[in-house]
Image (cartoon, rainbow, N blue to C red; front, side, top):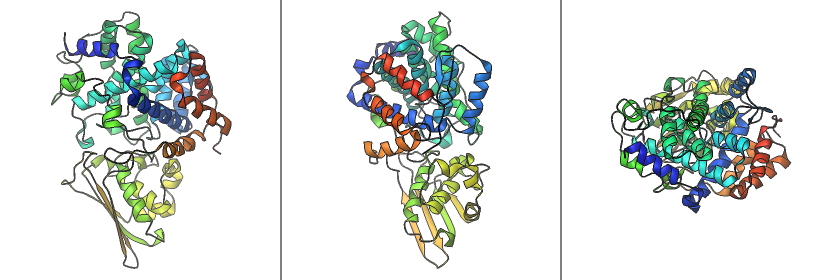
Length: 456
């Protein structure tokens, strides 16, 4: 049996009962976080445009488009909801880097809504879909963002979506192998689109394409059933320099969501900027008047794609060391509203961006397990304030966010789309998600589908 066959056997044998309590707990945390950021993200312009586009195409009334009040096919619902989950750059982060929630959770909930699945099967589907993404990145040794040649969710994500869908569709080992073979031909995402609306579609398209692949396989559609080891196959195309098949075949031993775990984001921006934000917030506590800042020096690893001294939009600012540090220094906080065009082009932001220097030091590791960022603030009165961050709270090697701290984020996101009563009901359902029968899962998804309301 080859790598793909052996992997598919392990995946097919994985059930809710084999996950373990720690895995279930972390997957539930990821599901809560993904739903919350998707509800907040549903009101963003890229999602509004995509929802209108999908609605105009028509489609069977199978699954809900969250926050937009209409239903479409499971594939198109997963597409829009996947984009909504990622558009704020606020979903949980993985090591090696990828976005494993947005390609899987929308798929599992679309199928659960259409076919009727209990909460524990949704958890199992999401766990299995996230695990294959983590294993692919780990096997490819994709730890340093600067070395990436493609955006990971566009490659690993489509395989994760196929695995999540295969679980709920009940695909056997053979059809799962074909689903992965089909999905592999849909893989790909260009890093050049980071900072644009298209970046979020990498995750949504992965969700839709992986689901479509599994649906085709369920009908008997075929592909190369040895896609991982095949010449010119998945590994040879996307990981030609190195790929450790043993790491891939260690699927679930342990689950990557448990070790090394996921990082819950505290700020809605590219994860490396969280080091700069954390250091800047520390320095900000000693800066009485941000208007009196004369100069700021940020010392960071070499990460060329986060060197954006003058972001073109607020969205582009999510991928800028300079902008995120400036927002932290000016406002003493960084949140969803920090990345509007209005905030980006405000007078004080324009002034401070012109005073920031980014020094990229090649001696600082670019791996999130070892990197550090220092922010030095010089004031007009001659005083200096220096702060460093070796890892934001919630990152690997740092203290995990408490449930109470996480709930603050969940409520802040959910209030942007739900009224207070619905918000409380949703959180209560998510707390006991593994106990929900199919009817209550459908009820929960129906809540997500309601048209957005104004934030309170």
